[in-house]
Length: 156
Image 1 (cartoon, rainbow, N blue to C red):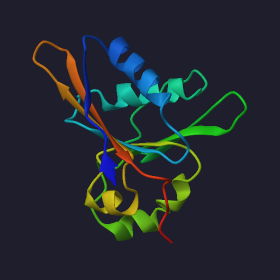
Image 2: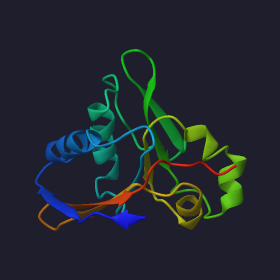
Image 3: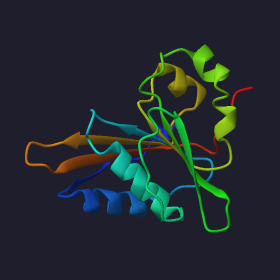
């Protein structure tokens, strides 16, 4: 795996962060896994909302799936266009992921993962890492690193 240079942007509002997610979505395929990395309140879910919108999800509120762990977003034809995982409440154990049916349950659409721990990093490696930092002035500094991979292969 090789990494492309980091792309950085500063957004001044939630709308700009969402718009950046829509732009990033243009680069994604069904085989892509996007890690959203940042502190609580950094804007991970806002960026995920932009990704879902950019991938054609029907207008619906994209919310953090913290309690559900996984949300799926469908496009106009009903097909899943993005899966959104939030692993904040999970222990960092591969067995826990397997018990939940991950990563097999997330095949066939791009995946946005909040709080990717060591276990998910091993089971479902990223094709893109997006680091979001909330600045004191309310802006967000976003850095994207793309990891070149031919395709996502799911462990069996």
